[in-house]
Length: 136
Image 1 (cartoon, rainbow, N blue to C red):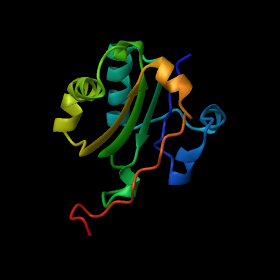
Image 2: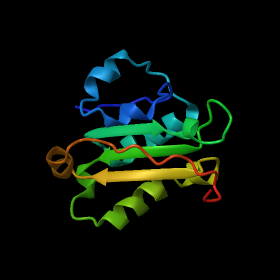
Image 3: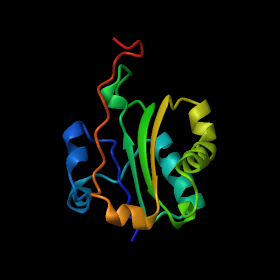
Image 4: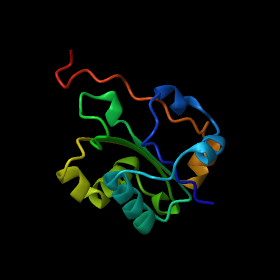
């Protein structure tokens, strides 16, 4: 079953520590920003994931409210079988080339096979705090 995660309304990084996303998904709105939806649509169309989560982390950075500039994606797909991690990342970056050239400043990628996802702890670690772009 494909589980889609909308994070447009997430304001707390502590959410990312939940092991079971299903309960939280039921209570969330299904609306997302245009860029987030474009990312989701392209990854679903090309990779046919069994599980996908797209997390808009823009709120953690010094950008205007409701920005879509910083994302973390988790994609679980059979299409990653026998592909090295670097090639998986290159594939996702290539699929999202237009978004990366037009406003998406940062993209963190977790690309797993279904077997890797099932044997994992299914926890998406929270990203580090923004350091202002200058390492401060």
